[in-house]
Length: 213
Image (tube, rainbow, N blue to C red):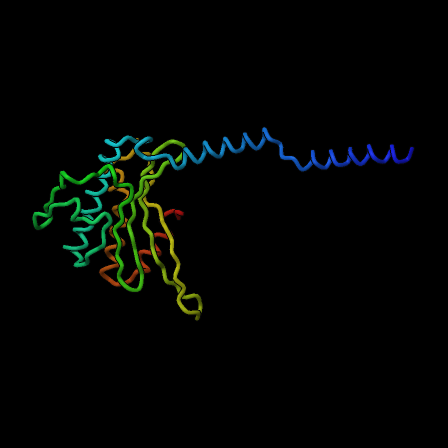
């Protein structure tokens, strides 16, 4: 009698443990579907979200603004910044401050533009990028800085920080809006470069701009 009572109990205990260890299938499937949908929205191809023609138009406008900044540094400040994509791939320079775009360049392939001052000891970059978020294309322009700070009498500490200058959906992007947002940061960047005082730009970004990723 005792064996008959114990054996069913053991089988029941095994069944309970197995049941507790088994994941709720429907819950896992639901979570997996949500994650898949979210990743699809976050990493969707720009051409699917924005359209090739629209991406090319905005990229051309961004490159025009960035190359104008390149010219200002080269001609007015005497400092040549590194540009990506390389400026001579998409520009035909005609002297002075005159230039035109190359018809052969594929502007629709541009998803990121960088202007970099790689002068020692700190790198300062202006970066524009196309991003997708929840199925919407955004244009984000940031200053990405290497900053050196001395804390009390400790040796200098270098930090990499990004500060957002402009962040707008592609549908609301305007050249005028971006130029307005760039005006003061660009003025401070030039002043800091001419004076050789990078902290002028660091302090401005800390006080006036929002930190990015």
